[in-house]
Structures are given as structure tokens and as C-alpha cells.
Image (spheres, rainbow, N blue to C red):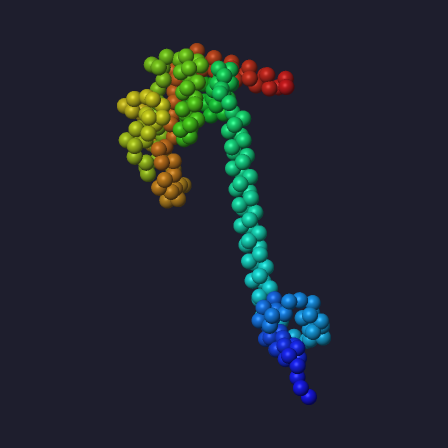
Length: 234
């Protein structure tokens, strides 16, 4: 009896399937267009344990690749969305009014400054932070909104042993527009982080800005309390 072409292809398909080939692999190798044809042929086929194991491995790999592609596409979408949110947020901040700068300065000191306590002697205001933009913004507020005399502004830097005092002074002098020689250095010693702190941890330390004057401190306390009271009534 003569074996036709389709019988040969079917027999080869069975052989490939029992070897652990997937439907898509068999279709590509034999040029079979329809996956349904293979499903019909293999409906009663019992796979060997070896073939089942191999097919499962291939399925796991295919799923992991698909998951990777999905995660990559999702990450790209999130990145694009974040960029769009960021740009729109920048656009919402137009030129700041004097009132905006006033509230900004009070809020900065409220969050980062040293507040008056009943049991403490008051010599002025003090704020410290490692963010150069925050320190620069606060000094703009001090100079241009509060109109505090430059002679009342003092500065220092708190550093760890991994930081150059000279580099720290020069960096913050440029940020604050203050002479580098007025900066005092405060060494921070932490035994807990001695061997854990990265070399570039706070590369220029933490700036300390002091505004001499008891009156300025109480003025700021009044601003903060007034702002707090206004928020309570909202």
C-alpha cells in the first residue's frame, strides 16, 4: 500500500511530538498552518514522561519570556507616565509671588528649622539640611523676604570622617553665596555607621545656617503658629 505525503507528515508530527516538541515548533518544522490539525491528530496521543518534562520546561521558558516582555513594556509605560506627570507638575509652578515665597520660607523652617521650646534660651534661628536647593531657597527667603542683615547670617557644615572639610566649605560657600572662611566645621562621629557608610554618603555634609537674633526667632515662631492656626480653620 502506497503511503501518501500527508501520512508521512502525520507520522513525522507524531515523532516530533513524542520527542517533546511544542505545537508551534512542529508547525514551523513541517509547514503546517493550522494548530487545529495537530490538536486533531494528537487527541489520543499519550506522551512519555520525558516528553511531558521537556514540554513543561519549554512552556516555563516561554512564560518567563512573556512575563519579561510584559514587565519591560510596563516599565516603559510607567517611565513615560512619570515623565509626563513630572513635566505637567513643573508647568503648574509659575513665577512665585512675594506671598508664595513668604509661605515657602515659613514652611521650610517649620519642617527643618530649630523651634523655640519653653525651656530653651533663644539666640536666633537655625536650620540644617543636606539638600543644596532647600538651603538656597531658605537663604533667598531670609535675604529677600525677611530682609535680614547679612552680618547676622552664620554658617557651618556637619561632616563625617569620609568628607573633606575644605571641599565641604567650598561647596556650601558657592551654594549660599557666603565666604568659605566663615563656615565652622562640626565633626559627626557615628560608630554604628563607621564601616557601613558609602564613601559618597552626603558628599558635602549637612549645611547649618544660623540667623542671629532673638527677635527673628520669635518672629518666625509667630509666622509658624499663625500658619498652623490658619490651616486648622480650613
